[in-house]
Length: 218
Image (cartoon, rainbow, N blue to C red):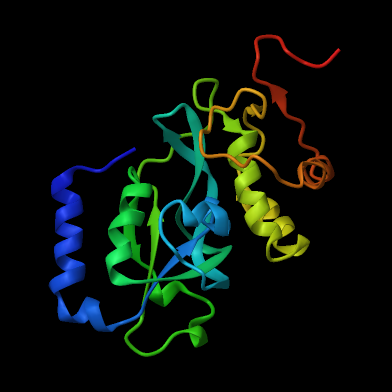
């Protein structure tokens, strides 16, 4: 989905002409598909990312994407923590992430970063939050193709990161469908360690339904 031209131009103006934004280092805390280097590359060149933890937020399946699937989001929640990646971005790249995260609100979470030793004075950490969460449903299910992107990204940092993602995400009891053959999420991966991902889901007691009408393998 795309944000309006006015919003994008405003972001470009702020990033290009505000001295404070130009000199400080900017980071985006990613907690879903932004785990994946390949997925981030669809938005901007961001080769530098490291594991990080965000305090006082909770992650769940809670964003109804207009394309017809449920995406991940975070909301403020005291005494909770979310694992993710701290992605270094250039100021001019922020509007591209704003476009990618249409429907979310970008907020400054510098003070909530548990690993602030990674930052220099004046650096800013942004993330994207959900203001009006909605549970997955038949019209907006959790899709395997979106989940594959997230878990492949987690696995870039090891099996433990993938397990932590699973353990600290709410909403797994809702509809989860396997759309690998007929993707609902259009920016999925052509190749991935699907067996590894499926084993991880089985480990957590998750079983996907097939997206074709009444379609389970015989």
